[in-house]
Amino acid sequence: MVYSGKRLVDEDGRVLLVRMPTLRGRVYQELLRWDFIGSCSRVTVRKDVLEAVGGFDESFVNCQDWDLWLRVARVAPVAAVDECVVVRHMGRDQVSGSLRAICEEWNIVVQKYRSEMPARTLGRHLGALAVMLMNYEPQRARQLAREALRLKPLQPAVVSALGASLLGTRTYRYMFTKWTRARHGLYIGRAAI
Image (cartoon, rainbow, N blue to C red):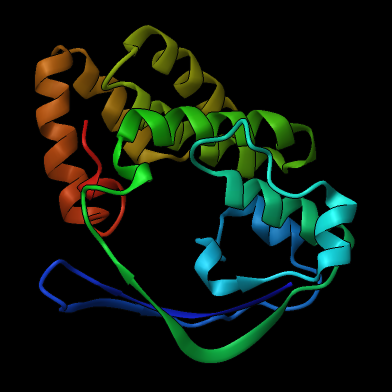
């Protein structure tokens, strides 16, 4: 598998971010921590490797790419092209534009690979999921948050989300929207709640 650099642009064509590849080789453990490869548009995979790992899992709506990268990285090294060959246009009309869809599919990938993740990595993923899920299912989110803090205790965002959730869903969504747009404006901050 080979991945390249990408440039993110907004609806007006302004460059928001340039991301160049930094990791190569046997990167499975790093991919468990985070999907540093991202979208399919910047990836090429050998046909025999794709066939060996079973290709895309078509049951996914989101995160199907991360799941595939994980399965490929288990069996093959990853190479990188140090050029920005992809321009990604960020907008609200993309498949991943729903926060709930992102959250649910991310959780499926995390649950699928949780036995292979170090405890701190799993705790970080569960914490991020809890913060997002608090917008929809506060009780389930609190359970995830407790497990996340048991696995990785120092997570200020999770502790803050637990506190903010006590103010009610409407207030939580308002605070969540402000926080994510300020901190994660390129992806989660643009997703519809």
